[in-house]
Length: 264
Image (cartoon, rainbow, N blue to C red; front, side):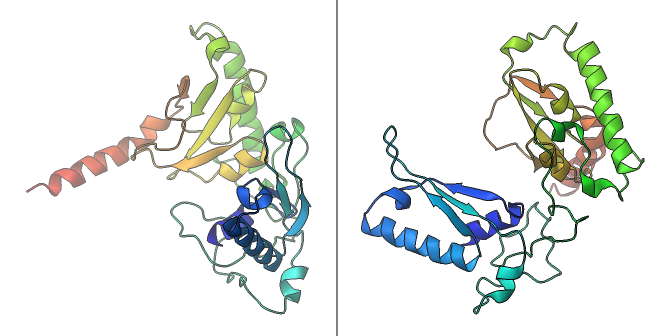
């Protein structure tokens, strides 16, 4: 159940998990056993089975929809604390090279806490600073909401006046883009009206802005650019690297000299 517990960590309170697999719609002994185990575990995790569809006439599959609770009431009322609730010292937001846990993190209930509220609908959420940034300092030193707004306007201006014209890029042929140093995801947001998608990458030695990117309705990942990039897709139509290599320069030098010092 570790993978489901990890999904529980990632899901927003009240968020949905859609599962399409053979245990939902096949009657083989193994599939039936897996489905029964799934029902038992999700029930102990306080997930609600919202719906289980019948087999689709077109593709022959079915879908089960589960929903994470919106409060901690169910966790506290369980007669058997399995899976257990994670200790307070376990940071639910830690995500880089963190081993999967066999516990559940409590649902954030404070109105100012990240994850306690749902964002605005698309595309309004793309332009709005997340509510939980109000008390924080931004990447560029201003109050985080001001930092966010300034970054958003900066990339709108740069993309409109420079990137879309005069660079020799045939944007009609660009489908998948990677922003190698995404910060708030402003570059991706500025491209929202084009028929493409952007993988936003937050380097691991940069401020952790990936939650902001997700809150905007965009998607992305963490990565260490001193390692190979192994996540699919392996090729992109356009790579964007704003101030990336200057930041990595010291790390490259450090790794090089460390390697030289360990040579026989």
